[in-house]
Image (cartoon, rainbow, N blue to C red; front, side, top):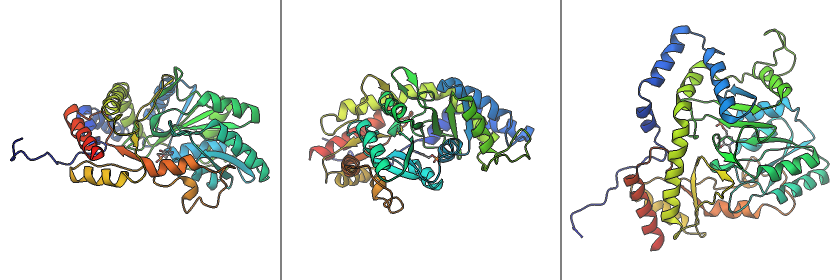
Length: 384
Ligand SMILES: *Cc1c(COP(=O)(O)O)cnc(C)c1O
């Protein structure tokens, strides 16, 4: 080998928002300029246009744009009248917002364990969590399955249990809008589906944003009212306690442009994931998708034997390659959530995953030569 050839250690971005900006050219700038010209910054025509496009994309009758993914979850639970005395079952291996909205409404989140291979809510553990809720004198009211890292949860198994126990199913698809489960799009699989347009999500805007999807007309009407301070037919008629939960017109205009290239980006993300999996299966546990679902790869997350993760992260960092740990602590170990109940039997899988997972750079614009640098670095570090 040439002694003088220095390895490339130039920094690689974890998510390349700038590459997407370049591809979009002036389309986004022009869309924003149109809003600046008409000045309908709140509930402007772009919001209605986006809602129609999102509903079609997600296969739901209604898409209600709102201020964030967290507010999408909150609005749906508020519309279902979730409150004190109610139990809402959440997976423990997720971002805190999933359980946060439950706690904000003074209901009780009950943490249930996930499946090792999909990282998603386990149906047997959902059953256990329902029994735990009853034993604690709470009313099991809802379940929030999460489609973690872009991969759909086992929605049919969860729906069967939900029907048996009369639970409201709110899908937390903050990371998974655009994914499919048994040929169906996320958006119409649960009674309500929430997603996020945070910039780092697969479909992101340039600020905060989110949406709720549902086929239920009455639920959609309540969510729309709650989004604007519980308004009635008249804007200044307050018929329920609501919030400021709107998406602004500028973000809607941006999303309309980004939605046009989203199907293409989903294909590109899947190609990146497939290249990772082929090259890394020998040195790490790579994600399993199965043939029933497609993932939008919000994260590409591998698992390593306990104790190996820090060494890999350090080796990659030295070569300009960032990594991230989603999530280093399961929810039931987080300071703010420790006091809430865990389903009987605990959540040992969530605890183990928190020690094993590490996520690699993932976005639609990850070029093969750059990805090869990442792959070589991971293989090099793990084969030592
Ligand atoms: C990002 C995220 C949310 C919250 O979305 P925001 O738009 O940031 O409020 C909720 N749940 C999960 C699983 C997420 O990843």
